[in-house]
Image (cartoon, rainbow, N blue to C red; front, side):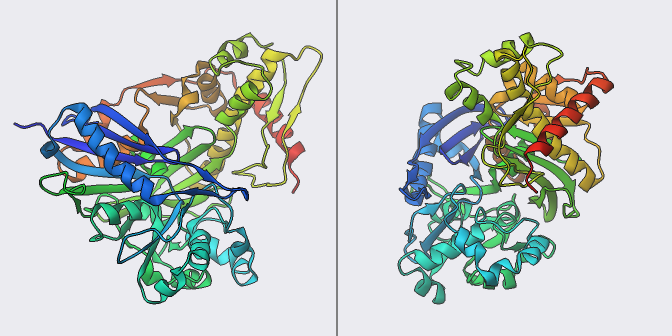
Length: 493
């Protein structure tokens, strides 16, 4: 039998990856292409959507060439994408009308502050599950419609398309035949009613957006159309999954049942809990979104995002010069005094979930004469675990579910001290997969299952290291109480 392969495209903030998987679900190869980060004097962050599309085409071609397989052996393609980054383009020509606004960019803040929008903030959150913010595409698309040359006129004539990066790539890869997004990406736009599962006409109208110009919403495992990759494939290949990158990582981690939870440790962190088929609006500082929709059934998540987790390690290295590489943190943490009570609260740009205090500022508490370099580095590591535990505690309260294990990914998970401390302070197992490309794996597994190449047993091939809690309860309670005291000192509300 001729070998068949799945390709997933992980379109992220810094670049675009293509990953190749065989019939057993093993990842065989990865190729990457970076794209330009466009930052102007006002601090606006943009991407060239055309460059990203061209890189997507090229990175798939490079992958197939480097792997030495036939282009006819590709069974299906899956896509995971950077969320919230917003694109606007001409429906007839397929050309972008402006640079894409990256998720990090807050240029649309003025739109959210307009009285006609801000007075509906509670309603918007109640329907969409997320707080009114320029972070989300609703305000970004509104800004593009108002500022991209010719966009508003084209919108009135229904000659414009706008959405997140997935809908742009699907449109271009299918040569304009398919204009679709999936439920996970739709749920992050702030234009989607997560209860009624549709574009919310009233919210769209508030932002000056015609819902008929938005993409069709479909299942995450649907066929989003077919691509020849501009004639590269001899016969069209189906695009059989689309998910936002964090949602794809949740799927790649195998968090398919309610109560299962993953945390991605990067510059910041994304924590997601699968809460099943019924939405729960948070009362404890996290947000509600859709995980995905499979076989016609949607599943929901609670999500919390942190600004400074891995970035704390970078700060220790580049700004304080306490370490010369992240790898040094483990030994220093182990050497630190056992009775030291130093806490670092990394509110360098405010505190995110579950506190949401943008005016809070970073602080170090609990220093004494014995506090030194090792203790400071350990406090930097431990604040990562404390913050993630705070978010998980909020999720447990909202969902009424006890977390028994946390599945994690990202560079800092290779730090044994941090992972053991995370397990101890959370009082739950921490599981680390051997594989690192969880977003790409999730998109590939979703596509492969939809295409009939695999079933859900494919998740069993991911091996994991496990950390189990070993800290005494009294010690855990004392450390947690000290952290909460330190956080209260920086809160302004």
